[in-house]
Each structure stands twice: as structure tokens, then as C-alpha cells.
Length: 239
Image 1 (tube, rainbow, N blue to C red):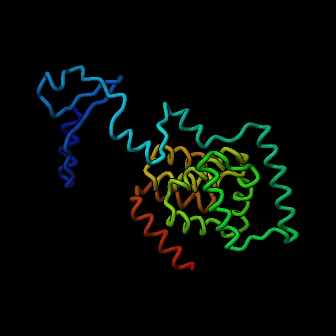
Image 2 (cartoon, rainbow, N blue to C red; image 1 turned 120 degrees about the vertical axis):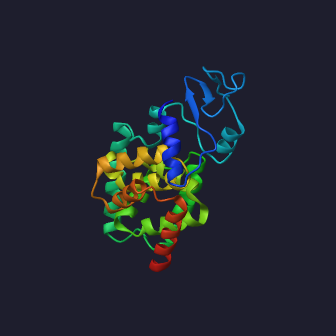
Image 3 (tube, rainbow, N blue to C red; image 1 turned 135 degrees about the vertical axis):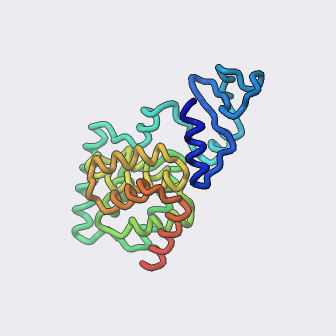
């Protein structure tokens, strides 16, 4: 409680005004600014189990997670058996691509993104498509195409896509999908998920270009609007 007045003063000195300051603890909350005891008793009032805010968040497709472990599960690596199957598929796809019999033209990648976004939205992303997307991030121009597609359809479909990819490919292959999961989560306002995803991406490959890019913009607290503008400029320049 002693920190709150000092924090308000410090923020005010930087031109930031606060409408209210609220303590939430053990399922109860109270306002530091309210001196009306019936309104805000010292031990607070119960936090509502549901609210208009929660309803709006759920309507946008955001899942309310129970705790940090539940959140981490959204980008958790697959179990060993599933990871082994993904490696087999990856080897087959890489071999086929090396012989030039898999199309990786831009239009092919756009169609693949559109289809897999639709599949992920209903929980039906196939493992071979998850692996194919992961490979194309490495050997094709899928990253920039994904940026453009994200600007067109919004971050939420990509958040659902790349988190689903992360759950289906082995950890050592997941740096780029984790970075895109972090980026799309960041742009859709899911900061906790973005933090979890980028931490995992850094742990896999801290030198990966996309990982470093997303990590830097998040560390600098660049607003999602500015990030979208930068992506749009990048897409326009590359186009």
C-alpha cells in the first residue's frame, strides 16, 4: 500500500494519469482510491466469476487459462512418440523437396497458410501440415508470407495456427514456429502467452533471426500498432 502513492506520483510526473488503483488478492479486490468502507471494505469484495470483459475476451477466441502451467501447455512440445513421428515426416518431406517434386512457390505457401489457419481454428491441424509449415519457414519464404497474411486476416488465426504447430513438432525444430506464436499472441493482446512462447523460442535457438526480432520488439515494449506498421512496410518493400 505504501508503494501505490509513490507509483502514482512517479507516473504523474511522466504525464501518465491513473483512473484508479486496485488490489486483487485471494479472490477479492478493493480500490486504493476509495475511502468508502461499505463500498470498499479493508478485506475487499469478491471478484466476480464472470463479467462483460471476460465475455468479450472469450468472444474474440481467447481461452482463459487457469494457471501458468495451463498457459504453457498451449505451446508445449509433443510427447516423445509424436515427436518421433514428426521427425520421420520431416525427413520424407525434406527428401522430396530436395528432388524438386514439392512446390514451394509463393502461391502454394499462401494456399497452405489459408487452409491450415482454417484447420487450426477447429482443432484439426494435421501433423504433416505442421511439419511442412516448419520446413517452409526454413527453406522457403513462408515467414514474410505469414507476416502479410497476418496483416490481412488478423493475428488471432495465426496465434491458433502457430501454437498448434508448436504442439506437433519436435522442440529442436520449433524455434521459428514459437517466434511466430509469440508475435501473433503479442499482436492479439495475449502478452502472457507471447512471453511464454518467446522464452521457449530463445531456449531452442537464441540466434535465430526471427526469434531475435520478436524478442527485441517485445523487450522494447513496442506497441502492437507500431509492430503492424513495421510489418506492413516490410511486406510492401519485399513485394
